[in-house]
Length: 95
Image (cartoon, rainbow, N blue to C red):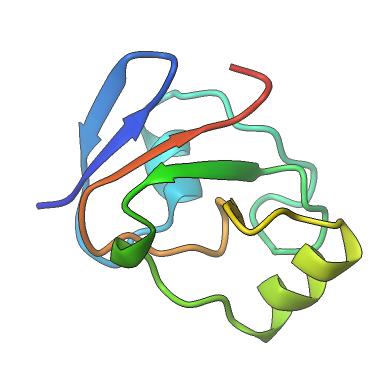
């Protein structure tokens, strides 16, 4: 099973393949910013991918659109959109 490393919290959580980072965070009481309940419309759940980008789903149309509107850097993704298929290490400014 893939492991998400929520750095710098020091929390590592195993998850099912295909779950979003948002789903895993919420179901494990890890705080994650959001105002749209994971509907890919607010952009508040932006996370930086430190390691393991190759283990994530490709951005879909909605995520790409929001990433462009919100000026995401190349290593940032929407936690509510990105699905995990292998180990990944992430961080965000509010942890």
